[in-house]
Image (cartoon, rainbow, N blue to C red):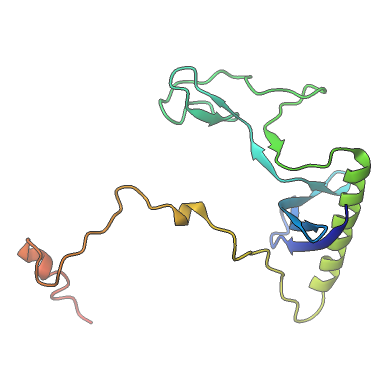
Length: 175
């Protein structure tokens, strides 16, 4: 496996543990996005893309994030302590979407990503620095792409409104 491209987007907030977002390209064929570079106790580390773990409500079977105290659908109180724990007894709230299988791969990826982060950090100190965009025109924001229920707009031919007051809307408002 060869990391052929590393893109770093520095975080603007200086008061945040999140230092940057990153995307990598593997062998010019596969992209991994939403990698985070986080300021840890022992310096920056790489966090792979993850999703929040969820479980189902016992009453309505709706999915809820582990941190939820009440069901999003029916409002039933959810059991405390239902989140799974790792070997050290820490609560697991997230699961990696993509991750290295072994330590050698993780170390190689982390070294390459952190080197890219340091390079971008140096570039950011130069005059005229323009932050890199991780935007990809192929990405689709599903919240914007999905039509919302109940928000459909009906249009009528001009002058065909049933309510005469609607035709006067805006009358008397100074320009």
